[in-house]
Image (tube, rainbow over all chains, first blue to last red; front, top):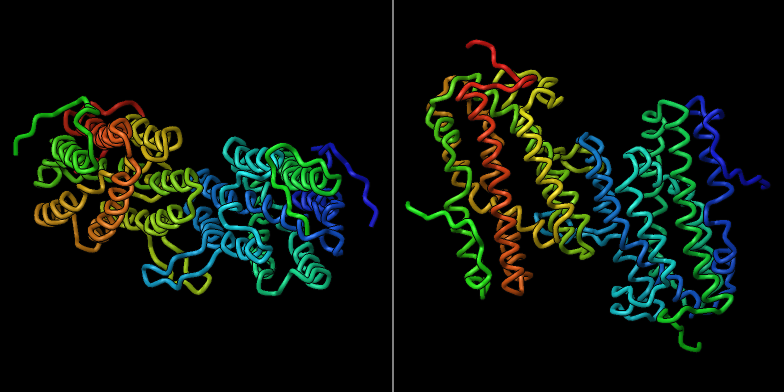
Length: 259
Length: 259
């Protein structure tokens, strides 16, 4: 698949929702982090256990910031229907504790901690987030700030990377199980769950931006929000690659034990 | 019940959680809007239908801003347990639509709209919020800004007016049903539901501030947050009283039809 990477989003090419959707899919095809060399290494079994640990440890900061981001998105809307639609994302990530007669349900963050447990990382190390790369923190915090500061339309649009998530999750489940003896099915439940959650979320967000972006300028802002978000994801892998593949771990960051 | 209104919150008198709780209850006893003359008129049948309409119309803006405020509170916490505890407030106010196999459940905002329906106000008039008093909007928006800008401890503390809510709700249900021929039990479900929701919410918030306010200065900040919130509620009634009892309706605000 060859795609030229078009950096600029040109409103003149965004005269309809269909044109915008086409552009969004091009952005995914050229910028989504499935294309990052670090993921190729991760999914094809080329990383050491320590490198996989570094990835899971850093990615925890992203995972654990998602419900914070989603609560901010909810707070941006006076429209109750949109708040209700978005609310299930909090449930999906934070889980529920089984009070109030609900069934207790582990959430995405708990599932991510099963992965880090399975990789032999202590919960304290992971949940303190003290040893993550500064690049991880900067990128994730920029995402949270984006949904707070930009328009509600752009806040929703920044979630559109979920359109492209099922492919990478499938690759990851299959590739990691096939290639690493330290990866077992029970620690991969996060990704299996996201296979059906992400499409539902992405469908809503796509319908929302198609309906709400009414001018070429709005549509360009939607596309730019998706570009921004692909940068948030890509930068995290750049940081991991530089630290743990190239080997230049910055001061204070996690150093894997020799394995 | 005679209480001197102590404006200043003195950290020297706040050396324990018990001293703080005592101070919080004093603030409620001297400042909660149950004491406002407008509520005395409302609950004792002294208002016209048009005045009750003005109250319900304005209060809708407060009600409909509560889930926005609560989503911001959720976004202030990295601690998943607190986010989960606070999340049910979104359900309580926004309701749920019965997708995903949940039972659909009307929320507090929908219940408030039953009250405004019952009072003969059109949904468009109410939900547009175009005809509310500027004072209402300023006070409510100040509350939303407070939970965004102050510490998470103060954000939680500002919800502590719920400690005092069941009393006023009981008064309101009994008083309004007894005194107004245009008030029927089925339009008062908002208040009946809050009779059991508010104590649960208040219990959590009180336990939270008792545990998290560890210094006299923290405890003073908690007390000041409650004072702030009582001012938010009181100012709304001042606005209503001036416009609809004294009779000086500001330009652009709702004018009741002659009844």
